[in-house]
Image 1 (cartoon, rainbow, N blue to C red):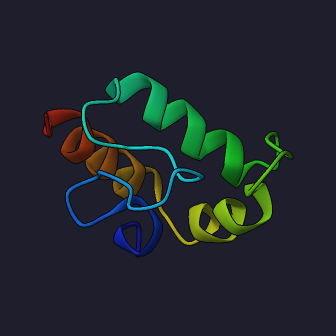
Image 2: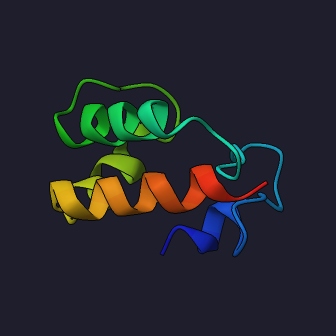
Image 3: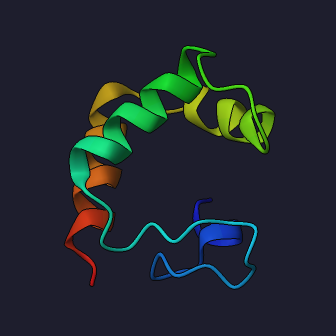
Length: 71
C-alpha cells in the first residue's frame, strides 16, 4: 500500500509525497505511531491515519526497518 504514494522502493514519484527510503527507523516508527494515534493532523494526515490504523506495532517496526535499510 505504501508504494502507491511513496514508490515501490520508497522513492516517491510525486513531490508532495516524501521519500521513505533511507529515513531513520526511529523517525518512521514514531511518525506511523503518531498517525495511528491521531497526533498528526496536517496535510495527508487523514489518509496516513487510515493506513496506520491497519498496522500492528510489529508491522510498523517491520516497515520502518525495511525503508530505513533502503538507500
